[in-house]
Image (cartoon, rainbow over all chains, first blue to last red; front, side, top):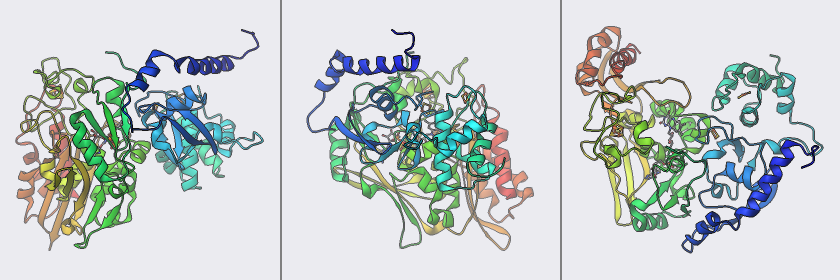
Length: 195
Length: 330
Ligand SMILES: Cc1cc2nc3c(=O)[nH]c(=O)nc-3n(C[C@H](O)[C@H](O)[C@H](O)COP(=O)(O)OP(=O)(O)OC[C@H]3O[C@@H](n4cnc5c(N)ncnc54)[C@H](O)[C@@H]3O)c2cc1C
Ligand code: SF4
Ligand code: FES
Ligand code: FES
């Protein structure tokens, strides 16, 4: 591997080849063979960040797995994988959901927004992303995509929230670093209010 | 015990009408798993503690969704209505704030966005021994790990134990018992109605199930009668954290008053019994009394006169008494 190949790149390519390999692996095809006829179609179209993505989805697959391991969209994090942390938060039709705790098949026909979908076409960050940077809000950053998605949903509903309303809006997102106060300030800044 | 990120191969049916759903439920029986928002489902499969063959996703069935007013002045809530909708609905916030207040305390915003009222009512107990897949009484075995000398039972029951000492996890269930709701249930072989109070069952009745639902039955909706629409309500949930954590003790109370005296009351506690626990002794003792601190002090011990404590849950006794006091203080 070239030393200039970033770690992120490397992970991405491993993931991509992992998908190719698993398509013929025993686990994958066994799951297919066990399927009685007439149930869920596996090759489905998803609307993710305004684009249509065709993807082969197992019946029991969660949206977080599809995003990360089938589509390589690793902006969505998996923390607990049990609905207890919020790192995997995405928007489904503008409403926050834990992508680790929902079936990909349940979002057919709905619009999925992940953190990758927030920036403008020219790469300008979403005002909330920019405010998070300006407030030096994240510490390790692992919970940040989830916090940002919760903030995006909150400000869509309530463009000028109070600090307490932000607290409630972000209450389904844990931060192990305890950067909560910085996140609250960043959301207030993004809403055009001084902190 | 190993825990996995992915669920094992499971079929998925996504019916769009209720007849197809009941036919599937009848065919699959206990091998099928009804799916609302899935918030009390995926953990079981990821942990390999329960292994259904197939999911029957009910969220695509429109008739199971929504909230409407009934001719008698009550409301009907479809079982696939999300908890967020229940918490925010104007009809419920106008007449039955006891339910919306309870719904607002469920889990976290995201779980309320996905979780359904039906799923919240039908969810299984949170006893961690059982959740982790141990073969205890509730799982069909012949031991209770929680009620043993070394058992960690801080969250477990004060009332109604019978071999199993697990408690109801649902925040909305006590509110619906207090409001005297009725559950509408359907299956391929017909429909029936069950009073909320009889819908939830304790281990002495059925140690394997928390509700009166048979394997092929689907909860269609919940009807709240007008009866308590003008009552004054009190709701409080005590948990370790305000988000995610289940109630250690919760209290849902409804009072009707006339000329400064309580004329009718329902007090129902969560987190202390396998079912929503009605405080009948308290309800009776406060009829004809004013709703105030003195009444609260006089009757609060009646809330726990039948309590049987375990090694680590004695704290629930004064907690319950204090919630009764606060409810009466108003
Ligand atoms: C981290 C975490 C914290 C939580 N905290 C709380 C809390 O504080 N308070 C609280 O009350 N709950 C809490 N919950 C539980 C959560 O609120 C419920 O699991 C959720 O409301 C269930 O709704 P659902 O639609 O997602 O259920 P599902 O998982 O879809 O279903 C739950 C059960 O009900 C059955 N079921 C669903 N719908 C029907 C129907 N129409 N007819 C018959 N059976 C049906 C399913 O087969 C399944 O067995 C928590 C859950 C998690 C993961
Ligand atoms: S309390 Fe009930 S669910 Fe928990 S270990 Fe005992 S029998 Fe099992
Ligand atoms: S990873 Fe989904 S809530 Fe923690
Ligand atoms: S910044 Fe580290 S977990 Fe939130």
